[in-house]
Amino acid sequence: MPDQAEDLIAAVRGVEGMYVEWRRQTRSGLRHVQQAGVPLYERTRHFRIYEPGVVPGLLQTPAYAHALMGAIVAFQQIPDDTEAAVAARMARQRVLHHGTRTFAMLLEESAVRARVADDAVMAGQLGHLLQAASLPRVSLGIIPASATRTMWPVEGFWIFDEERVLVELVTAEVTVTQPREIGLYMRTFASLAELAVYGSSARSLITTAIDDLG
Image 1 (cartoon, helix red, strand yellow):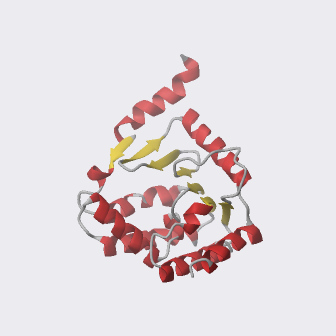
Image 2 (image 1 turned 30 degrees about the horizontal axis):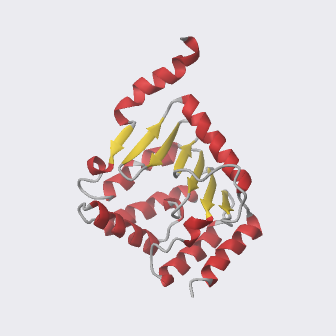
Image 3 (image 1 turned 60 degrees about the vertical axis):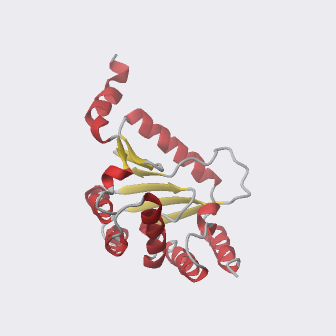
């Protein structure tokens, strides 16, 4: 079946790491998970990131990351290495500022408004988003809650060049390497990007969310 050969080869090569439960990855805490992704981040030239519920790790402040990771530790009942995990996540953000990588990031408005931390932390995080949107190699789009959907909200996913897609589920991390499936995620991202607002319109949604914190 020559028309399926490329996908079948990718599936065979990636089957061992295609579906990895979080309980396996986080037996010693969250720091290892943050550090394990560094080689992939460093070799990627173009990131496409979609998050429906939280600010992506590359744009998180330390305080926001601490609140989110602390909640994950408590929920998953894993060893608490939150401080070390946050430090590793912040170190991983260096890819934003070095090299010639580009970053296309799409957030649902719900990700901007989800209060995963107290108001002061959220205000700091949203202010940081405004700054990040001005970085020269970052494109930040926000999909308004009022948008007429031609593409429904889906699970959060990260596309690394055209090499692989990472999808985070409640129970596991899924790695997609089959070209056909990667292509489908790229089409999904493109469709979602058409729904987003950018520039001053995106900043307006963020500043309104800040104002609504009270």
